Image 1: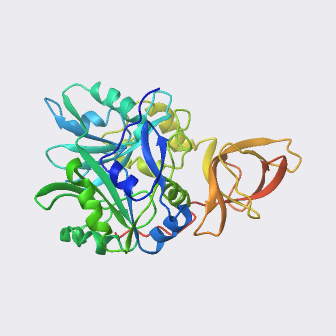
Image 2: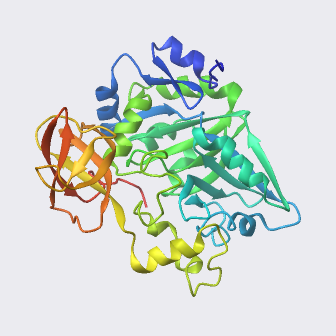
Length: 370
C-alpha cells in the first residue's frame, strides 16, 4: 500500500484535532472538531482557512517557444491573450472533445503559473512535458492555502496589506516576512477570497498568524465540497470527465471568441472539431442543478428518471448533498437538454422515487470582488 503524502501543514491539522482522510494520495483534513456544517456556515459569514497544498503547482517557461502559445495546443482557453498578473480558468481536452482536467493559470510575465487537480497532477505533468520548447517545473517546495469568505480581504491584509488592491482573478507576487508569496484573488467556494502559494517551511507560521484572530477558522475538505456544490462549480471525476465535453459541462464561457471558428487563434487543441460542433449546435446533454423535495439528500450515482414509473432513465446525479446555505438537499447532474429549469424529474433513493426540480446553477449568489 502506497504511503499517503502529507502537506506542509500536516502537524498543524493534527494539533487542531482535524479528522484526516485519504484524498488523491494525500492525508487531508476533512473536518475539524467544529464539524462540516459549522465550517461551511463560517465561510459564508466570515472567513475560513483551507489547506489546498495537495493540488499541483506548475511553472511553464518559454525555452525556444512561446509558453503561452504552446499551452494553447492543449486547451481551448486563451492563454496568449492573458494580460500580465491576471489569472484564468482552463480545460485540458482530449481528441474526442472530453475534459482531461480543469485548471487555473496565471501570467507572471517570466512564467505561467498553473494549479491543477491533485488526482490529475501526474497526468497533467505528462502532457505538459510533451510540449516542445517549454520548460516545465513541478513546484513541490511550496504550500497552497485558500482564505475564503466575506472577511477574507480584511484578515489576509493583516499579513499582506497589498491584497486589498487585488480584484477577482488578479494574481501577484508579494512579500510576507521576507518571503515571496504568490497571491490570487480567487477560490472554490463562491465567496470572495484568495489563494496563497508560499514556501513550505513558513506555511504553519503563516496559518497560525491568520488564525490568531478568531474571525478566521480552519475548514476542511467537507466544507470545501459543500461550498463548491452550492456555488455550482464542477469537480473533476464528477461533472468533468474524459467523456464530458466543455459544452455538456456548461463551460462554454471558458472558450473565448479568439479560440472559436473565425478567431485569430481558433482550434489547434485536442478535440477542437468535436468541441466546435457543440459550441454551434449545443451538446445533447448538459450540467444542471437539482432541488429534491423534502429533506432526503440525493447523492452521487443516484439514478434519475423522467417519469414516476421509472420507465425512462435520463441520467445520474454527479454531485449531491445537503446545502447548508439553502437549508435543504441540492445536487448536480447531466441531463438531456430538453429538461429546462422548472422541469420535474424523479430520483430513485432507497427504492423510492422522489420528485426533483431542475434548477439553474449556482444555487447561491457568487460574491466576487470585481
